[in-house]
Image (cartoon, rainbow, N blue to C red; front, side, top):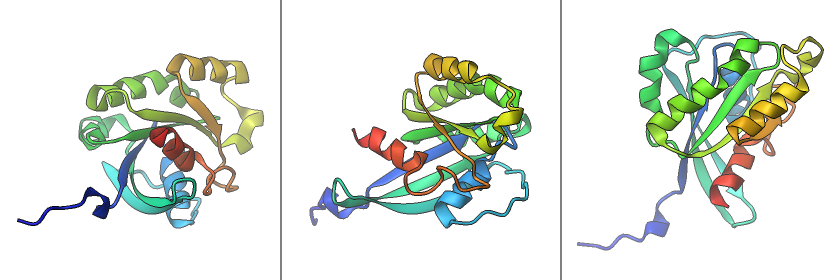
Length: 178
């Protein structure tokens, strides 16, 4: 029997993207993985899956991200939590203009931790272009970030702000490897 060298296998990280419905998870993952933005809302049923290979310049290697965009509606709760298993990282997303998506963040964290334990995580406040209509104050966001013990990134998928290579997926990789 031939010995296998572990270095021959691709390095892969399963990243789940969670949060309430209509906060921009699908738009965010599609913009990041495929460079596309449609602007139309399409409810995710269960989970969508995308892949992207990212070059880690500091380490001189690449990693394959398996990005799992999960449904945010309660009717899919039992279905989507099964997809959390095996995740090495999670991105929690809430909308600047959706108070419930913000208040539900601790619930999402509990659900992920029930399936995955403590994994590398970041928090993304999406739709920052609508900051004038924000449903929560900056202080509330900072308090939630402290409470959840996560790093916060602000983005606007529509305007492609903080969604490119320097965005949360790359930041998450840096945290995961550190």
